[in-house]
Length: 460
Image 1 (tube, rainbow, N blue to C red):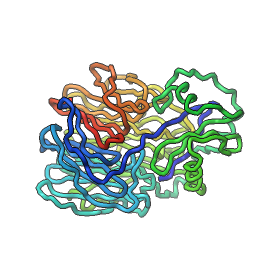
Image 2 (cartoon, rainbow, N blue to C red; image 1 turned 180 degrees about the vertical axis):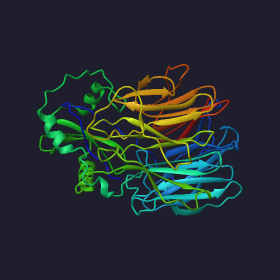
Image 3 (cartoon, rainbow, N blue to C red; image 1 turned 90 degrees about the horizontal axis):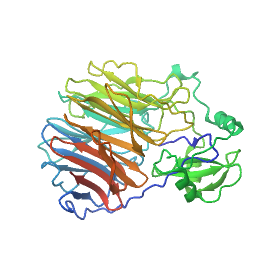
Image 4 (cartoon, rainbow, N blue to C red; image 1 turned 90 degrees about the vertical axis):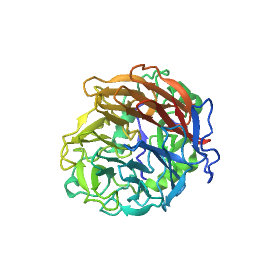
């Protein structure tokens, strides 16, 4: 997946230490627990996706190298089944929100996953079957899911909706003036340098002081950027005015990044959607949902999708308009035929010359309505239909889930996994790792995350 290198206007800015995961091929302890609260779904794997069905089944899908695994629980998260291989996908895109997704209808379990060629596939099996069918390609234009970022949901009637960031060329966007990162970078070098509060949190969940301690000596006139490695982790690099690397967290990975993106054209990421009425075996012609007037949405932030009890479809994505990369919501009340003009989430804005690689999350309940969570400049915010934004903490990658009583949230703060709910708003550390997810059931809540031990969960 191609990523755009980030250059912010301060002399020194953002860094992130990625958390690496083991790639063992066998699960060691499926339900190893401490005090009945903690468990291990698998001792391997990455980028889990979670769902809950009307059949009271919790489904978990995750990737490991080029393989996709599925595990489930039918006792409200007390235990999970041994992960079983769904399929292998050559070039499975796995890292920084790219990975398999899952939805469960009354009759089928559906899994989707992208590959590095830029295509998106689905696999399906009936609830009573033990074998998977697929892959079935979702995007109807070859290699048009080039950013490898997608999401899936199902409506109450069992119809599937899959959305993704599409990179196909549209003739009407050819002359649009998409933001020119190089030109902006040159302008930024001539701007007056800003005074930086070392105690302020970076978008990666650590303070600037903590970041500088990691970097050490700073070359004169250096600007800090971050880039993705081949596994999707963010690494820092210090560049001079000519974009030469002066110091890097990993020079080898930065060289690979340059090689991957040397001939990169300007991104033209758009929100597309396709539907399926047969459990994911066939998909409709894909449809354009939204195209930014500035040429591209924020191309490296994962979109989210969900449906309500009445069949309304909601898509959240990070937009890019005049350099502001804020979360927007668009919705459809006619089964995905038409979508509303996207509405910006929150009262603030984030002008940033690059992609934060953090798409936020949304959840819907009958009584609480639509609730969204997102990151802006390292701060985590939450908002409901009728309330203004509320700051929760500092970090990135928020995940939220609601029942008809309250909403629970989990997010990353550096290597710490932080959890809270909207009634308490007092985040507490529940573990260490990354890629956190939360599932809020009627009587309990289950958190999921990944670290060196594998795919973890905690039930409260």
